Length: 365
Figure 1: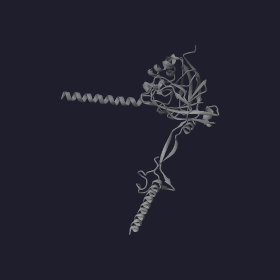
Figure 2: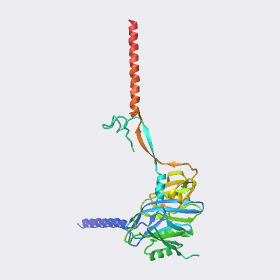
Figure 3: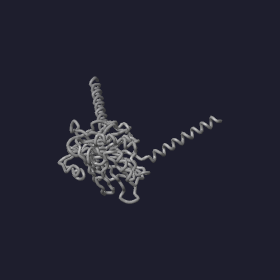
Figure 4: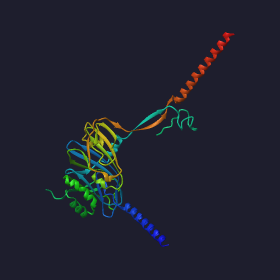
């Protein structure tokens, strides 16, 4: 009896521990996103659901335009971004990514097949002859550079060279820097990088941050294009990174930095780009767009930032999705015409053979 009660007590404790663990996972804030860290206001929850970025490098300056889609109940948040030099911040064009998605979209192509499949006549009861069945990305440790209103955000631009000083600044503004995030920032300090903290707040009082946020654009001097990724080591769930790299040539990442091999979704030259893309590229005569995606099943294994380099060639690439369509001639399935022709030839040959046989028999008589 005592053993039974002890087993029941242990089972109850295990169940309570599992429930507590599950509840903790529901309220824990997401500190890291692909290219920086999002720190919600104390007591709030905020997670980055999707991140898409465009990188432009002209040989001297790099510009990163980032669009985050967030979910949670935080009325305010601080976004932290490591950069190799002093950065300027402005609001990005929300139409940029729509334009890039349209450029990099897969094309539709049709593949024809000869023999009928399920759903084609005569295997489909309600289909007529010829109907095909389609299958259908030495300064002070903390210095406030400026504060301004950018779209729906109250943005405080900040550079810092000391994680402790950054923690103090965040605390003074209602944010708490997680100890793990402070640890991950130290390598950037060792490299003499700076990092920018941007205070995000909705336009209307009482609102919370949610859905697609307006893009933010950061520009800084850089000897080569780089995309900061090390802060994503803190992410608890698998991460997907989507990048559009804009330049004179096709680009690629130097390594996988702990994730799966990056995949190219699109590579091609766009002549005389207009709209938001034209504004971003200074209305250059043409720009080479490389769209990359990478999956990180275990973010803790991310080992470095992404170095972006020129690919070995400018060979273009575009994804395609296919629809299979039954081959027809004048609306009639080609297989039916072919089979009919073969049967006609066989029938004609048989009739000819029969006539010759009859003629020989008659001659013998």
